Image (cartoon, rainbow, N blue to C red; front, side):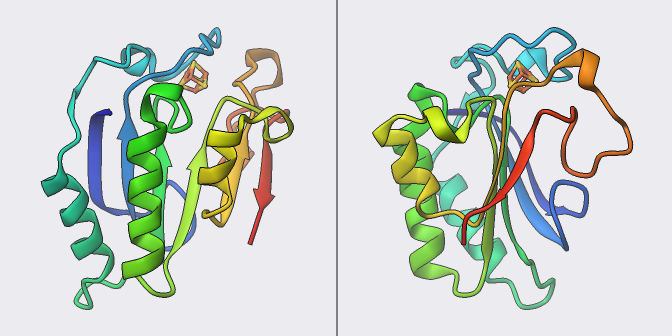
Length: 154
Ligand code: SF4
């Protein structure tokens, strides 16, 4: 998996103070996409074990308490990203007690593959659906367009 940005302290992408990772790779090609530079799975830089360890350490850092981890992009559920994202969310579940995981995807919950569902079975909140320009609403919180749905999975 490749990534574009990691923010160890973020108060914009999800509730509370969070760690946020923007991954590379998205096949949805939504007109009006705010993040076209992330579309190619080989854009950005390689996500390493050191990156993963840092996220775990940041989530467990008591000096700046984090509510959880946000995964965005790009699309964390792009087929190219699934094994690395699954590894990461399994570690957060095992090593970061009490932290929630939010994930943004252009796929829809009802049409996810088994491999994508394996990831969503471990997260707390999924925001799904492509960005549709005609349904764009700046008043929406944590969504770009009104077709997108916030699913509270656990
Ligand atoms: S799903 Fe998100 S990142 Fe992918 S094309 Fe649509 S708006 Fe852009």
